[in-house]
Image (cartoon, rainbow, N blue to C red):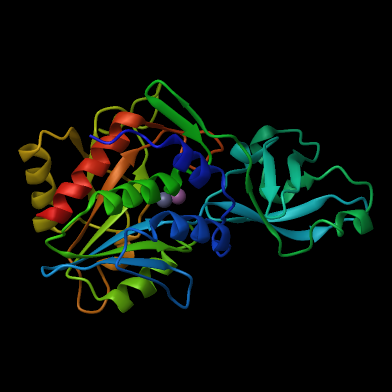
Length: 329
Ligand code: CO
Ligand code: ZN
């Protein structure tokens, strides 16, 4: 099946794009897919929509372009930046990590002196961009500017490690499926959504506009395979995960049945996923208008929302194959 495209992955993963600031990543994806789609448009919220024409059902495939990040809320006299979160950023994950602003300015996240580590909160933390005054800091950043984690993409053996695998790996799966789709039996809308991490906002407006017969989100899910973690049936390396439930959706029974059938028919490794906390774009898609039967193909991912998320190459390949076969059915 597909060979992993490391050049494309590196580009997708290392690009800056916290929620609401998807311009750069959108242009990279648009450039990558322009020769494969019959029509490409961007809606008012910034969702990138690529259409592959066909006679059958209208299917919306969604992968979110945005990533978690931080926003500068205050700059002190000595040039230290106070910040708030964009999406799910834990203070414990952010501490002493490097962050990158859109112009390439880099900083490190530090903290005030604390007697108890459990008191760590974003309000007790700051970003140090290596300047000595507010005036100097403001030549580089301003209140309202956003930053994402700064970590290089790594691929070694079966694993990929990077920031933003949530959900650039979903975008990658959608891009590869679009490229592989020749004469399509269905009409497929590949939507690269905005603002998923702050509440599935892009998917909500895109689904209303597209008005699909079926929705499929491609996103990461957590795993239950690391030492003494929360019990969960999903393991990295065991195949694409077919979601049954998370906090945003109960997968439509017909969609779940279709996904499992296609996986079995084609001998694609798969596992069933029940995620206790978290949601995806399908959570918004399935309650659009009078309802859209929807499901999710998940890529098992360790350390979600950290600068070093990890997925398996095999699982990514399974997800691409499963999506392609479903779209052709
Ligand atoms: Co996420
Ligand atoms: Zn996600």
